[in-house]
Image (tube, rainbow, N blue to C red; front, side, top):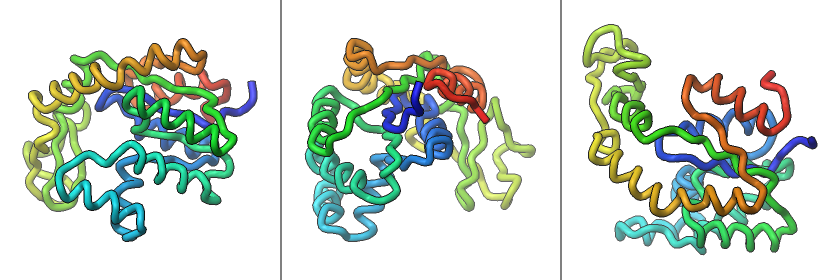
Length: 221
């Protein structure tokens, strides 16, 4: 098959979407569009769209789908996206998916594949609840998979390790519930459209990378 250059990466929180999106970016030479990063960059640049987004964010409101799609459309017109894109974190709902389809039609583009990284809920909770972050330098550890040499202390700067509020079990469970109700229905939507590639997300990032690359028809190297 031809090289896929327009890809959406789906999966529950903690599935490793961002990591796999970066692997795909490097392999394809395509741009990586993370909606969270894109919003923060637009706000920091104080662009007209960024200022609009900031108004919503400052009021604690979600940024509208239309504004996010406008930002994505602006990004897709830039030079670094001419060889395609890897979209990470969007769409998250069916209305967003429909909006993305309309945007791509207007740009005379279409999705090649949707990669769904499937990780069971109990594994997600284990992954996220075990994370610890250094309060000084931001280095991340995991109590099971990558523990610090000294409990509660960062090996890099001797800073104190803490658990972020969004890594606590009740918060993770709530995020998983939101994903199940809002984002998981996209799996069947894209499967019916013949775009979905479902990947086993268990194992280390290189294992998952191999499965993702194989599903898209090219070598890991």
